[in-house]
Length: 259
Image 1 (cartoon, helix red, strand yellow):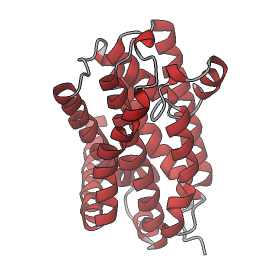
Image 2 (image 1 turned 180 degrees about the horizontal axis):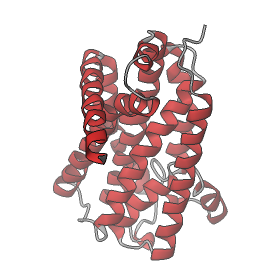
Image 3 (image 1 turned 30 degrees about the horizontal axis):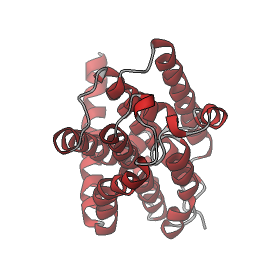
Image 4 (image 1 turned 120 degrees about the vertical axis):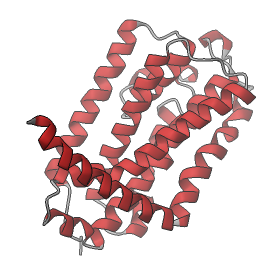
């Protein structure tokens, strides 16, 4: 019985994801941002690494740049791209029309987010392989933590993008409303600046930011220095943010154009 129910839902979800992927491919600026920014920005972090004592924290330049690259993929391949996508589909009445059919609200949002999430996942894999081959990054010592961190980051970015879109009036303003989370995550979640390089008190506060648990799991998977208690705490924080974001989306997401 469950299989009979899930099969049509899966087909609807795939159809919506294919349509969204087609629309994404037509948006050249969104594709360029999603593909090029996560590849280019990690190299801007490289000069600052020479001033940090990375060895004390069990890090090296390759691991830090790899973590930064995956973090930038979260922010630019998934989060900022999806904020614009959700707003554009809402203002074009696409979401409203979809709600009149068989698709449920969760299926509509998930189908819209699926291509960007898959792009972020594929980019994370490519970046990992590239850093392992061409930089001094080492293979993950606890790969399950890295996989868990990537999945948590993708899910959180999709949910937070839907929430941000709820308060965004136009596609043009989507770049502005997405900036606060992007900037805070870059500076405090261990993406542009390793968490180990922050003062202890500031690091404790930044560990509670939305993307900090995911980035911490990704980094901990490569270094193998994340203990079981710390890993569980990161998972708990990530789940708390995800539940809060999903609740907020169900409460405040707007399906009608904001005019």
